[in-house]
Length: 65
Image 1 (cartoon, rainbow, N blue to C red):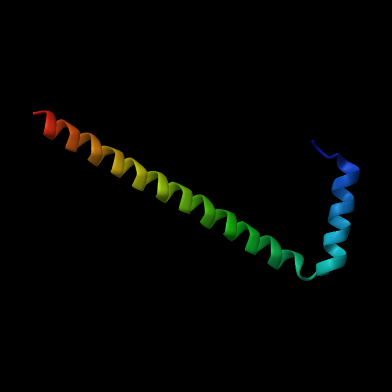
Image 2 (cartoon, rainbow, N blue to C red; image 1 turned 90 degrees about the vertical axis):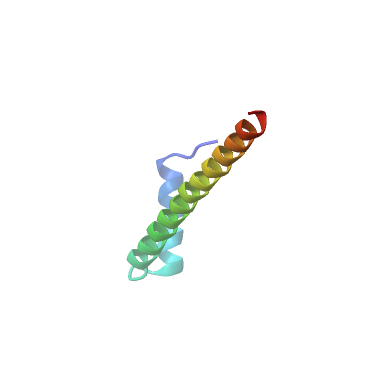
């Protein structure tokens, strides 16, 4: 389910009415930082999962030897 240009403009108008034009740059900045932190958290969790998987594989190899 996607929305077109008209629906996007309605959403933008509602956001401007709710928060005002002066607050929009602050909201955009905060949203950008939140997305950046979320992506960083995902990358960190992937790295930790890779470390755990590697530890499990090395333990299994040591037990087989």
